[in-house]
Image (tube, rainbow, N blue to C red; front, side, top):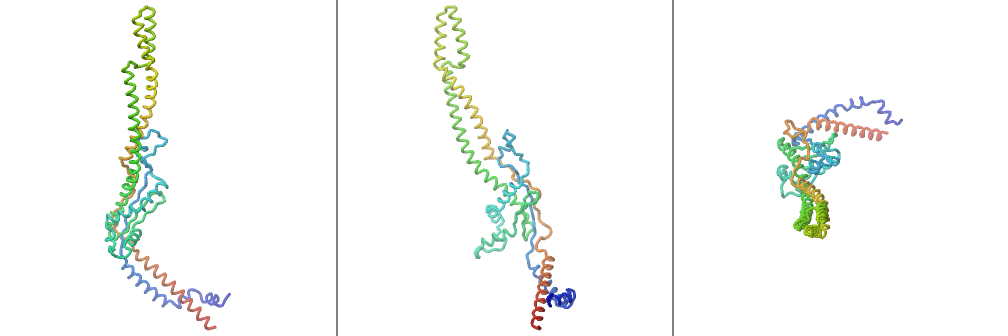
Length: 335
């Protein structure tokens, strides 16, 4: 055991503090007074917050119109970790920050002059200090706003929550409109194609081909009866009709079957077109608000007692360290 360790072990911490109690009291009082004065110079801020859950729905048509229940999502279902992270990414976007700054003229509100150096960097830093977004343990997202005005803090928090819907709907609609144009062009083109098949069938019907199989069956029966009765006039007329059916029947059957097949495809394409229109025009909430922001009655910052306590504690510890160093140097010099 070294001589220094023996010294401190024999003297003890209590004795050491007692020897320097006056100095420590003076330092504590001075630190408390100075930190208290400093804390009153710090601008008071009030906190307002919004708590919300993201939704799971991205496509309105799939959520509401899709008959396939396997791929359908409940519009009332709360989002999980992935949706919460997506919502946080939107909240931290430049678009959100820019709109809030412009809406509330935060440059002027924060006391920044337009011609001062690095004004935009300072404005962004103040915004990030006063507006924070975080995920709760229950996968909700919390918006917290600090501001000298409790009313402004609440207004900013609620405005940001509303911006989530605006921004997400705008992003979704941009893609949905592009998809709608593609599906609409395909649907209208295919509709014209099916119409051309129908027109061709109409022309064949005008030539007497209405239902090829049943017509051939009936005319064949009539032809047999006419032959048995030796009615040559009827035989000739029926044979002419059968010849016409033979000439156009193949085309009729092919067009009829093709029309049935393509009509089914057109129906599916129409469904996609209607869904695309819903996605491009309709809006749904992208969040569930749990708590709206209200003006706070008490300030949240600064916590003056904590500032004073930490300052006094730090000053006392620093003083003790200085005394210990001084005593160590004195003993070394006295050897």
